[in-house]
Length: 178
Image (tube, rainbow, N blue to C red; front, side, top):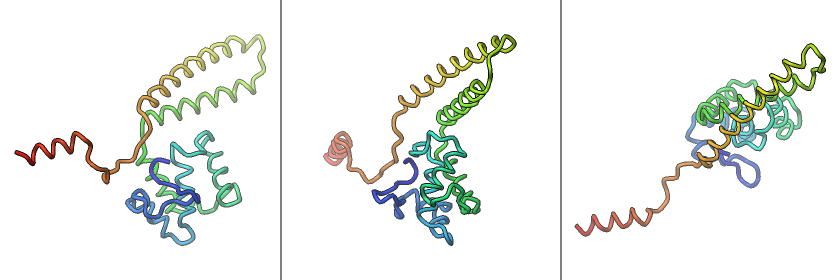
């Protein structure tokens, strides 16, 4: 996950910079009837790198709610603290490449559903052929987006507690000699 870390027991790290540094996340942790599981729900719904990322938005909400709370509709999802945390999570991890990728996936899904529900006859064969050509173009552009995202590399959190690199240590030594 990108903004929040989940430990091996499946809980959000309470002392994680993302959890304690963002007021909206802290409010969920301290909110009545909410806590770690609710913040985990937010992360699994909103994070681009969520294990549930392949579900569309409504199916993701149902799947995460069922897995965490045992029912596909979690009433806490309407809580203003949860809504605020979801909005903040989405805002903090915004990346136009990811947004474009999601939009392309949604359009391909819409077209696929339409094609599945359409019976081919003489009247619509030509328009369906144009649609399939359009899907092919969308998929090529989508692949270009995937390639750009792979070139971007894995998102990493900025860590300021690392040791100096060899060149930084050498520069520091050279400056101390002068």
